[in-house]
Image (tube, rainbow, N blue to C red; front, side):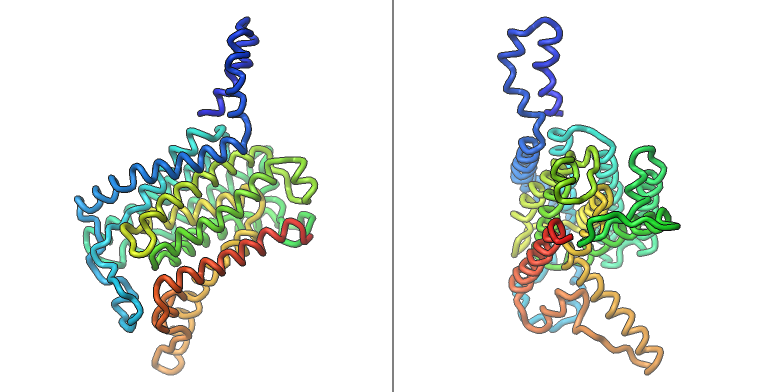
Length: 385
């Protein structure tokens, strides 16, 4: 919305009000993406600080708190965990989604990319909200069936993939593949179908990976912030033709507005982390984790960098793989030996280290360090081509 203020001086000058146009020339600052990026981040942070206590109080008043033991506490052996998670209000993702949407609408210039991102956030937040609602009202950690969540995520991923594939100017986002450390674009027979598969997997996989990582105070949101910082840089470069050509990355017209969106995510995420750091006053729940993870996948697809997301989100990948390995090995050994065996003490991986005696804050801080290393590796793909 603020972007359109930059057009006021020009409109006044064209309509015979040159004197007024000169006096309002300062409004032209709103046309710069860098200025609006900073504004979106600060606005989102301040909004979170303002509405955070109100939302937490409301969640407590509505008794939307987790009164059952989480999976790690139920399994036992967490001698390093000082505080139980029971009673902490969930659904805090509402705060992130609300602030993210408002800040984006205030500071970004509307285009199709923003529409796809905001739609994805709303759809996945609604799915997560319903899942949290079932968990909290029934006090059942299972929530809605995993097949229902997967079906909605797949439908969203396919919709975005098909929309881009059949778009007159955006079809290359599906029809060509861009891989890290290679300066060209890969094209071969059937690449459209492969691109559609990559798009869907990026959105579905990222959404679920962030959801699996959300198990310790500040862990998921902190790692999400690190990945989003990487994509602030990538979206800005992808939307700037000169920089994109220099760094040999695909130029995507309109992608610069995703930089404003990412900044709003960072501001909202930092504001939420203020209340989610150990000991957490609120959890984001599936309302936040499904939405944030999914929209990271959408952003990666829209700037032609889904494989960079795999690198930047290395912590999320490790967490997801640990669950797949644990589940697969347990089922295999149960069929073969009659008794299921485990690779890790517990999955996802952060609980494995908890059971080894690491304090919760140690696990989170060390995973942050890993996240930063993965982020640096992802950024290095800009020059190592």
